[in-house]
Length: 488
Image (cartoon, rainbow, N blue to C red; front, side, top):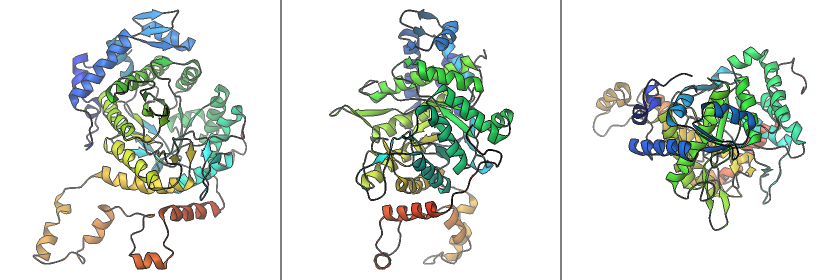
């Protein structure tokens, strides 16, 4: 087992991601460095003193080899701090989620922030309808075709569940739809062990060989952990199977304030951190160097109804704070933002998505999933919301980019030439900086009212629907190579 090059005290005082080369300034930091030390210390104390349950036999055997205390009857494992740090140090600090086209490669841990869809939602909301309906495989294909055309959605995380299929058909059909209709990276949750094998075989066929797929992995998987402090049999088995294959794997957990975690945000961060580190450790016990992505889907409950909330600002705060934690540990990060709890395409649907995407994006999360398309507590997907969220993400990316201060951008020569009372309309740099310094929306309406009225006084939702309709009217192409003709 590889050892950390620093002792425990050093780890608590060093932002490991910065030490590893990420020098990007993240302007939003809800936690101080001292706060990070406290959460880290609390997490190590919980893992050693309270421990965690492991209900997957093979996983229990892996942990037993490195544990400091084991309760066979209760299946509880306790691990000391130095072992935890040694195990997480084996995980790569960067994970590249490749596109079939290299321009779509997403290098998590590089300092860039990428955005993607998320799910898996059971329902779809058709434009103009008050009621949603169960999603089908055709709906998933439509979603993927829209995502493929959206400039600011970087990763296609398969966001809907085809309700008409048997569960043993779901994995292969969902991933095949992704590989058919987009050449962006395809990520998805999985539902059966056989399905995992089928998806990997399909991807290897598309890549040309198993070696080619592992060299440039254009698919990745999600196995969800169970909060608090528990590793279940089903997803523990899936995690082990995927880790053995050496393919990228996100390991998100979903503690809920007041439900499966303390009501305090700080306490929820401790549970979130422990649960994610448990899964990260298991991947490295199974296959050291597994490209694992620390995941956070933490949110809160509405204590009046005891229901999950997808879009509270507290979710944005927790996920932004977790971005700092993952930078502290030097681990790639799968964050959550962009969901709305609205049931329709209204103002709430926009502002909830914008607020959390902006908070988590400015905190420097590597990959923000659920960033586009999800509404109604992540239960429903709207094609039009995909388009609206693409615009929101474009704006967030511009904010993340910050302001370039250089001799050229200060424009001293232009300012001197224009002088007092001058203007810069004809300046040679105006066109250049209009393109590089200013985000140009494609959906938002910036016309004067008379023009807007004359051209139909459309809303953002209607304009998004027109974009969706235009894309779906086109005959769909296929990114699958000719040799891959059928599901195997």
